[in-house]
Amino acid sequence: MVAPRYARTILAILAGLLPAGAVFAGWEEGQAAWQRRDFAAAAAEYRPLAAEGNASAMARLGQILFLGLGGVPRDDAEALRLLTAAAASGNPLGQHWLGTAYLLGRGVPKDVAKALDWLGRAADRGVPESLNALGELYYEGVEVPRDEARGVGYFRSAAEKAYPPSLEKMAELRWNGRSMPIDRARAVVDARAAAEAGRPVAQFILGVALLTGEGVAKNPSEAAIWFRRAAERGHPQAAHNLGAMLAVGNGLAVNLPEAYFWLSVGGDRAPANLKTAYLRDRDGVGARLSPQDLAQTRARLANWKPGQNGPGGVSAAAPPPADQASPEKVSPPVSVDGRGRGRMATGTGFVIGRDGTVLTNAHVVESCRSISVTAADGQAIPATLQAKNTTDDLAALKTSLRGDDVGRFRADRPLRSGDEVVVIGFPLSSLLSREANITAGVISAMAGLRGDARHYQITAPVQKGNSGGPLVDMSGTIVGVVSSKLNAMKIAGQTGDLPQNINFAIKADIARRFLDSNSIRYETAAAGPVGSAADVGERIKRVTVFIQCRID
Image 1 (cartoon, rainbow, N blue to C red):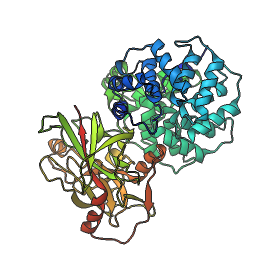
Image 2: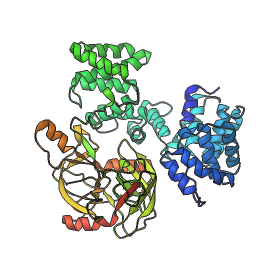
Image 3: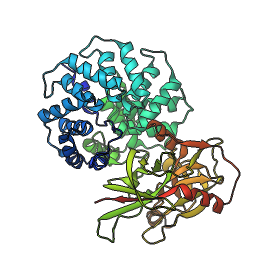
Image 4: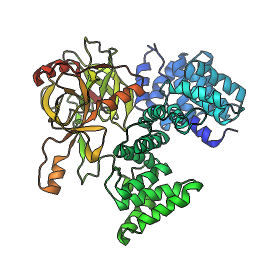
């Protein structure tokens, strides 16, 4: 019998393949619904195609029914009928899920030999989910003789395809020197890619590396960010490390109540060999709290569950509550389309790939039923979501744009505080013209709110609608992605002083890691001759696009 945690690992795989060349009516609509995780709508689009024998649609519909996604009732019998037909037609996604069904004994009698056969066929086609599943089976010896070397081979193949669970596993093996020599630098590379995809073990490993300076430059502030993300998922060692840093002020300001909170999370969930030490550290901080602080923190602990963002559900690595200083996303308020077509939201993006890939913020395309982009001299064209990372607020859109130029990321010397920059975007598009606006300013700080090392603080004015637009240097190379602005009115209400031009942009290296982790091509260039803001803006306007998101 498959151990429960491996069954959960297999069933947690929701990301399937995007079959190439499908041109049937309804396919694009189904894929768009799948990308926005509207599985009921996707199933409705796939059903007629599956009835006509479209193997890709059969595989997708079978997956939805097999997992019971999005409220669609689970139907093992129908799922297996569809997956069997798709697999027999050579569809690799169908082969993967048919193999999973035989492995779990879901809808069919359990048959490990058939499971390995179908998973192996999908793995031979390069399906990362199947490669990772086979890696788990052989590495841990689940249902097959244990063969760590073979398991590592499968993990490595899936990691080369940027599959987050396999990247996380390779990071763990390389960091600990299990089944391969210790290689902390390579472990950090794999861990960062998996951490950015939300994998908690990878987030913990990356935090340890940044805290100790092993395999990467030492950076306690960034280490605390990654420990917090893993801790929010219930990772005990990450929670303990975060609490310890808060207790002594290492990379973070001292905050004893929050230190006690995270030390408690770590202690409650610690493995047996660490539990005594973790609880001792927790009690040491608890002895320094006032009775009122101790009672309030314990009350928060009673209501906290993994997946929330810390005390009261608020992360210090994320924007603080609305009654404190907080950046606000700069996409515009949702409006009603004057032609009666429902609610619309808008933002900005820029072309970074010769294949028409557009980069923007994840929050710009959140909950979109359809997306369109409009270039400076063109008509609105459809776009589909290609990849998204809500943690770092980045998204890539697939479009048919084929211009003469693309935005190129700066590839040589790093920026410094005081360097001049330009922002291009479409602010307040419902009030202003649809012409791209150009504003200039400087890098005022090398970190964002609360020292978030992923962001620059900039003085270039931004408004609602600038989200996702390019931040460029004075030679026209991309150095960041505009993301948010400080909520000036809330600050004024607390301090009596209205802050001016405190805005934030995601650093280019974060954007490049997002693109790399999703195998999306982009171009780089060394910073060239310095020009005026007008010259830079005129050139970058050609690769900047206006984004419309239809919400309902």
